[in-house]
Length: 298
Image (tube, rainbow, N blue to C red; front, side, top):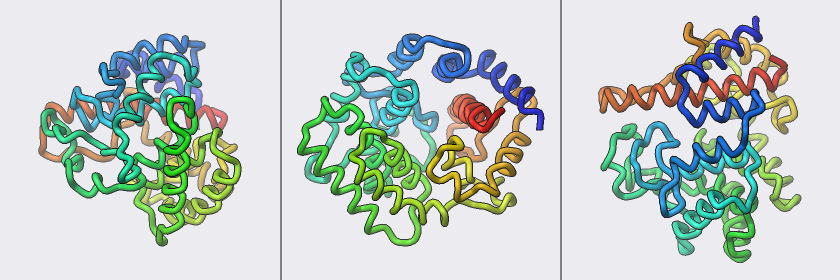
């Protein structure tokens, strides 16, 4: 494997054709870029209500959505954005205003989702509307990260509810739900006992959900590097044998232009909009893979 060449091609792609937010993130992570540049670009996706739009490539609605806002918080976390930044304060205000204290949850998408092109699985009122994990579990982590913006009682009730929901899960957790629980478990501001319990509860689910057979990696699903972002990951030991092969497989999938493409599509719906979404996903996936390669010594 020529990791140096792979990384250079990926970085060149992002610099040449990447979505602006991934360009700024690549610069921040690997080229001594400025956090202010990342936040300024992120602010372009923030609406006056504090929520975010279009960060989820499969939803092109200009209105705020909780799912797009959760992606904004992923960026705020990975860049270590200060809690007192106005962008952070406004985003927290949006989450607080969108929270339903009766269900202890958020609506993942707004009712007017059909006002703009989107992937066919984003259906208002469908199964996703009843999810108690996606993105609720992930958002709980941000409620702890930015505790000063949320009532103590809300945080306590929500934490108890999310952990209880995870305890009650059977053998299988849907892969997107599992990803949200894993982001919660990565939250450094969690109470220590909660963090320990989450790891204990999640480890067997991760062990079962991740595909170890390389033949399965061509399909849409969880691979070892989907849940292990660096060698210090608490789940790295589960896939010690598979990670080198998964890394090599991932590198082999790089396109001639230096990018990685999604292994899914919108089908026949909105072909022009899918072309835009596909371009944005290339940026997202390419930056993610570049960070993985470098985390494992590339």
